[in-house]
Amino acid sequence: MKLIHLIFVFLFCSFSAQKAVLFDTLKLKEAKDMFADDYGNLYIYKNKDFSLTKYDSLGKQIGKMMLTVPYKVQGVQNPLTVPLFSENAQELKFVDQNMNEIQKVDFKQKFAFIKMVYAEDLQQIWLLDESSKRLLQYNFRNDTTINSYPFDASFDDLMDFLVYENKVYILTRKHLRIYTLKFEKLIEIPIENGKRLRRENESILVITNNSILKYIAEKGLVKIFEDLDAQIVDKNTLSYFEIKANNLYLYSLEKSKETKQQTEPDPVQKKEEQPVESPKEQPGEPSSEEPAKPHGQPSLEKLIEEVSAVQSLGI
Image (cartoon, rainbow, N blue to C red; front, side):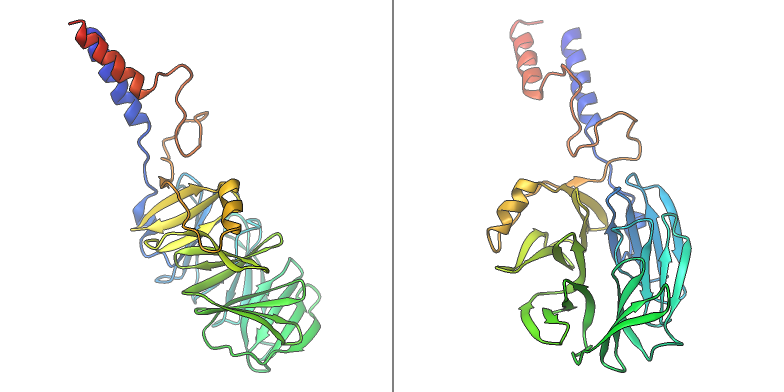
């Protein structure tokens, strides 16, 4: 009986060690948007109080900004310099890794009305001037307009834009449109609930409320992640992230599956939900989705077989 008791205690401890703890739901409540950088840090923007809060991968708050007007976070690919644009304030802010403002670009004195900004790098930005209907390439370091292009596109329902390799990607809630710098439309692709654009090296991604799509010139938009029940989705170079029912989940980004999906227009990705790991994780423990078993730990099936064998012997 002592052996059986020890086995059941061992089983209980094994299940307890594998129990995942969700990211604090209070931190995710009323989130308007979420971003994940390549260090596993999460940025939660709440439209209710115009706050942007940064957490590490275990849910510990790193920094927080309380803004007076709405701001749009462009992206967190460079966590040392995160750009935020406010159409209301007509300004672009850059914040550092601790959410402290390090630079501000004021557009009110130089331009009529900037509808949207794309920060290409730490020197040049692209501006959509709604009043003059022009696309401007602007060096904010030396206050110089490099190029100006007539751009008589509709600014209604505009969600995001970016410029890459002399092409202008315009995202609305219902379409992705690609233009040349001469305002020649190259392609228009229908989508649902378009939210923002993102460039990863040479790839252009479209983020919607519950899916992530990659633009491939030969095929159009290909889904690489989708969960119809998700409230917010995002990705970094290692994982997909989603907020669903005020809980945060992450999924491993498997290169083999993504490569397969790029060859099939609309596959449904198979994934296993893995909540963000508990802040109580001890140093040195594996950080993979399924906690690794200690070396030499028997499997559950083997333990059950041993229990049955012991019971059959009448011990």
